[in-house]
Length: 422
Image 1 (cartoon, one colour):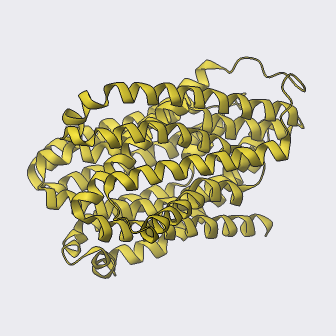
Image 2: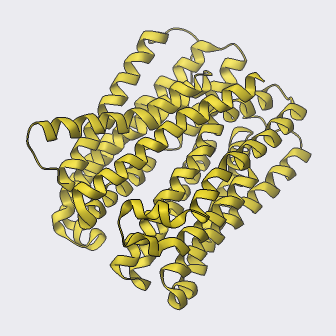
């Protein structure tokens, strides 16, 4: 019962974040128009990509490492790990940001189609540094058992801060533009990251040179976790790399709305992972294999059950949901149906990625992510050529289904092997 309550609370917290993101999508679509929201989504995509590069795999490593260390009663080492990871991603983030500033004018036109987008690239570079730091802090909170706080910091606080900043701009009499929206988003990320860091200082204190020394971070698992994060980001962004070859701008916009809706439903897995991820790591660290298997099977039940309302909305009520964005978007119903089917298989498989990452099998999950990206790239060309945006949607859904089944097979194989130290 306590575990059910925790999972339910996490879903409610993450659900609030989904509502906020959905509200932002509708609001910005109406304020910025189709072209403006397109520029803003380009900024968001590059912020996520650069943030993943700057993170160096440390958010997932922090979740796993801090969970295991706290289970062993080594709180000083857990603090040292968090602070070390934070310093590393901030340093990497600002280095990447300055590089982005230097090359933004030269790469804006070939990457985004216009040199005028160099400003959003520069903002994305600096926002990425704050995003990487925020992800480390959020995972550390989840590892401490503060799942709802970690979810709020990562998913609820940034959109709330952005909405507040947009309101201030509107009250001051300014019209919102895509460049201003990007700048406000970056400032919001920085504010939330600084506030969360202040909370850590207050909670744990900052005592350099004391406690359990950390030592160098292990390179192999970090590279694997970083590769997984990069591939996950790549699979999320990959449709937008190939769609211009097969679809009109209107079809790309319709795909973007359908894809955004499916991404909202995927937040269920993030909420469940904040509960079960640390539990997987702790049960593995204590060599409680039977408990680990039970936790994974329970996570599958929660994952599938919590997705069913989204599936109903995206199939039976697809036209009503899509019409919120404008009269032209109900034409995307088939795209939404296809993507919803792929997400159904993904939800039924459960938290396979977290089981592998939290139990020392990160190289296996890296292989699974690689298979997913390659599957999409192979399938998207013939399907896109034949069916346009719908074909790309089928390729994307199939890639998710292949990855889910493949990762699930690896999880069951890992259960039969000797536990691997992390």
